[in-house]
Image (cartoon, rainbow, N blue to C red; front, side, top):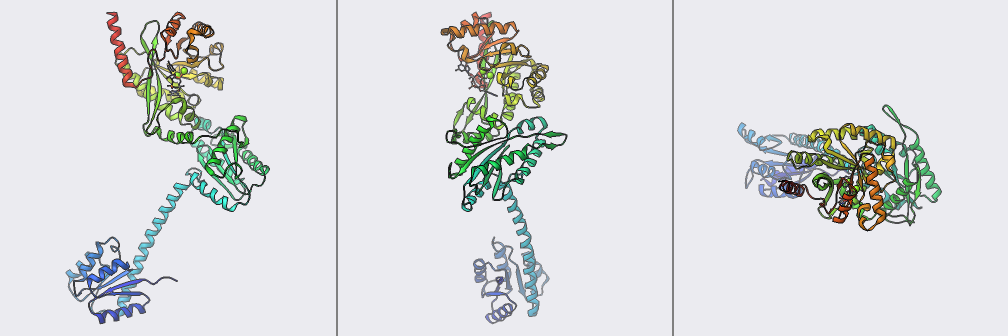
Amino acid sequence: MVSMQKILIIGSSKAQLSTTAEMITDAGYSVEQAETGTHGIALARRLNPHLVVCDWELSDCNGHHVLKQMRSDSYLVVTPFILLSSLYDHRHLRQTMQLGADDCLLQPFSDDMLIAAIAARLKNQEAISNHYLNHLRLAAENLNRLSYYDSLTKLPNHLLFAQRFNQLIKTSTQPIALFSLSLDRLRQINNILGYPAGDNLLQSASHRLQACLPANTTLARLTGNQFAIAIGNMAHLGAVRTVATELMDALSRPFSVPGHEVFLTASVGVAMYPDNSQKLSVLMRQADAALEYAKRQKSNYCQFYKSDMTVATEYQIRLETWLRYALERDEFEVYYQPQLNLRTGQIEGAEALIRWHHPQAGTISPALFIPLAEETGLIISIGQWVLETACRQARQWQDMNLGLRHMSVNLSSVQFNQGNLTQQVAKTLQASGLSPSLLELEITETSLIQDANAAVQTLNELKALGIQLAVDDFGTGYSSLSYLQNLPIDTLKIDNCFVRGVTTSPKNQIILKSAIHMGHDLGLCIIAEGVETIEEQSLLENYQCDFAQGYLIGKPMSAQHMQTYLEHRATTLVSLVS
Ligand code: C2E
Ligand code: MG
Ligand code: MG
């Protein structure tokens, strides 16, 4: 039943009020009465009526006063108001409308006229309410979509996934399979074909996944290339495996993006509710651990969680969330570590090393977060930021004549395999105004051996910009000097582990000495890393090593400290010479 609309009538004559009330009630409304203005206002505040009919003449005030009070009350400001008046005065009428009355009936008027006025005002009010309700509903729907759905694929996000999973627990009489599925090559595709193509591919991939899932399933997109799937009533692991195979088959058919035919592979990790855990957050991590295992096996591989797999700790998960915001929150800083030319005794180089100051966790080591940044693809933007900062800084020190001849910047293998690396570096150099010959990029051996042909091409392109190239952590990977012979590199950085304690290890002495000699034969400049004692430095000088870097010469330090350090070294050297 539709509830009756409530009308409040305010008037001074009791008899008149009850006649009017009876007439309005007969017309199908519910009526409340007030005999004074003050009582009327109080009643209006309490009842929040749909409409107010008010006499001009009241025992304690007039209709304008009541109207003013109502219009200054946030609840009654839009309540329709009809004034009944006997004043035939143009100014009075104008004022009534200006105060915000919706209608004014002049005496004498018939019952029908009043009922018609009430009906017209209520109808108008309803139209206005509907209009706003529609707006509100649309806004609420939008908000819901934004907070529960992924905007690219229109699939549920992690929040909705968690809700659906909890519903599934209630309705499923058999075990539930939780899949963590990742598209393996998406990052390369983004790098090579660009993000619009990658987005396109993600949309097509999610359609295909959706199409081959059984009923009673929730598919969600969690992060860039990762999806979660919950499937109820999975009595047998065989059935789970069949679904996984169907999903991977569906994705292995070629995708067409404008101008290309692209092949994707997927990996799947599975955890079972309630066998593995009853808690969604734990199951997700178990499925992720299984996924990591699957990725290491071969492409298109599905792995069930086993209790001996390492599940990511809460800390690692938190770290990943923090890392996503670190750049925009300005939590990174670049430190610089001096490099000493062993022949001239001058500080001629610096290596840029990133530092992460987290407001709660303090300083977090790059050894901890760089691998995570690589895994999530965040290294591309973080690495670019380091490059820009270091180039700008080097240019500044160059202008100050502090004797710096090169600035080394570390390049992750993910950045190295990024399609547009050379253009990015060229752009950054140009923006900073740094001479290309002053920039040295450090690349690890592992980046070089991943795809040898592509590596040679990238190195040649970078070399063509006029920059220097160094192989970092030499000796820890698989590459031999003869392999490096064919690459356009300038510098070899011998890893810490061959330098540390070299004075007491004859074996390391042989390795170090021959690496330096063979490197020189290939025309390479040699930097020894991790030099901590004066004995190590003397030994390196004996072996004709070109540069030394390590705590003995200087720890990595903030830009400000490095500048003071360089200024101090510069003046000391000048005074030594003179
Ligand atoms: P790396 O490029 O081999 O840098 C040298 C590391 O050795 C630095 O560690 C440095 O602080 C440390 N070190 C230098 N001298 C000594 C010494 O005498 N004794 C000892 N014990 N250690 C010394 P850090 O700064 O913690 O960086 C670790 C690694 O993280 C770096 O190794 C590099 O691979 C990576 N990294 C740092 N910054 C960046 C960056 O901006 N981008 C990328 N992609 N990787 C970075
Ligand atoms: Mg380095
Ligand atoms: Mg190194």
